[in-house]
Length: 59
Image (cartoon, rainbow, N blue to C red; front, side, top):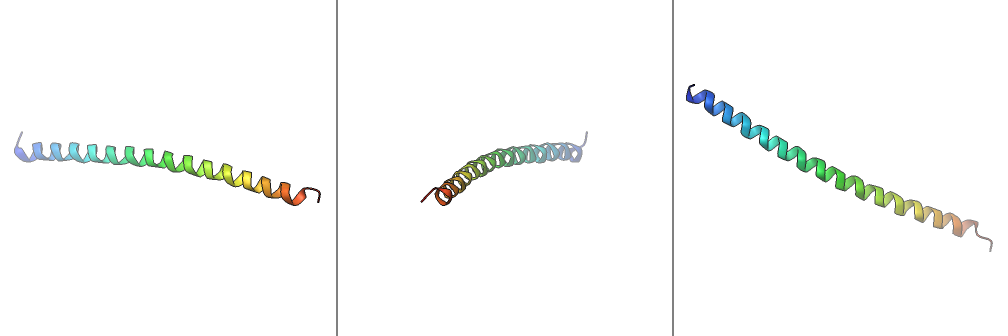
């Protein structure tokens, strides 16, 4: 096995590892953002419900 083939194998392994780490990080970040959007959506729905209750309540 010549040195260029060995260098290619090592470089390919290193790039694969870096891509794996990047995608894992992005997936974790995506889950955090989805959780934040879900909480924001719940708060928005509660605010809309409170507004409707205020508007529709007998004066």
